[in-house]
Image (cartoon, rainbow, N blue to C red; front, side):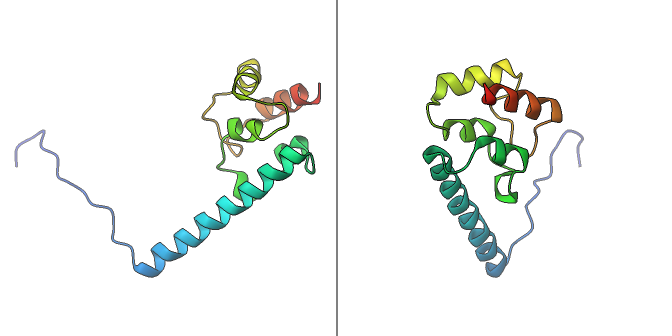
Length: 110
């Protein structure tokens, strides 16, 4: 074998049961996130609650998407808010540092 050549690797095969279980979990997460976004938009749930103690299904959601779900928040305001707190638009709720979380909560409380 010559150097520099790459050997193609393949992901391990998944059984039909594994794929179906993964699909069920993903659908359940999507349903829960959609419900939470509706509750945020309606004001039934506060952003503070969600960001302080996020449910498991929200840990991999983007903070930007959560902000867009808030009343009176559009793309510009959500982007401005994240920039002010020095948070990347691709940051997930579970990936927020304590500093980022506290700055974001303080900004939302204003």
